[in-house]
Image 1 (cartoon, rainbow, N blue to C red):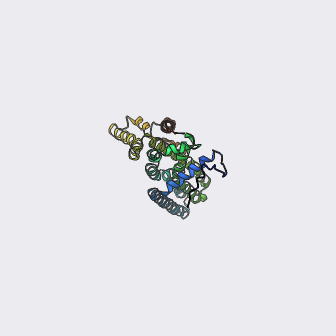
Image 2 (image 1 turned 90 degrees about the vertical axis):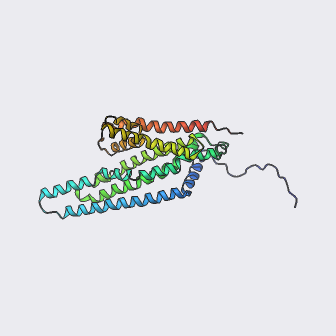
Image 3 (image 1 turned 180 degrees about the vertical axis):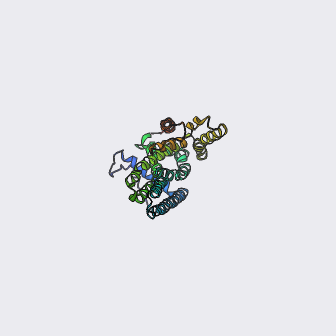
Length: 299
């Protein structure tokens, strides 16, 4: 059978605007993250843990509400029980519900975020991306946004459910509105955590083509400052508490307490955390941008 050389055939299909590249890269990354078995395991365990925590809050809260409603007619005893109930079902519980998911978010960023750009560098995929009408901004958003979406839902689901459960249980105590209003701080704090950890991990992943090395870098940024500050704080009985400024996790939780209108647990205030969080996010984006801008594309 003879072979017919038809030469170059121009593309005659629909041409979409370049802004659609944002969604194309984002949707591709969403599917790639979900395809990872390790990510699925982390998400499943995080979901089970969130369900157990919400169920525990609902069970303990219902027991205390029932105890309060069956209390004697002694006004002082009833008021004391109501105060204990209000303290048990407070914003601290919502904050703890979100912080309890932090370990799964960290595992997700270690498993995927810390190698997001390193994998493309190793596979020489950057040349393929930038040979298309894809900018550094589009590429970074496509890498950060999907990871942030997964991290956000891991945190926000238990936080909002616990707030709604508290509002439902305290409806008869006149505290339903104040507890249900904790949904907004839960969303905001979850957003802070997801942006910080997704931006930081993806940015650090640009430091090397070796995924294990970038994973070690990101783990070091998260845990080494926290460990050093904790050891020094314990040895000096709180004389060097300012070392916690180098810990992104501690500063994120400090800002979280401010979002829930809880007082700080030491001399460090919420505005001190802004410098650390801005340095992590800004520095990570700068590192990734420097790596991407040096990509050579043969036209």
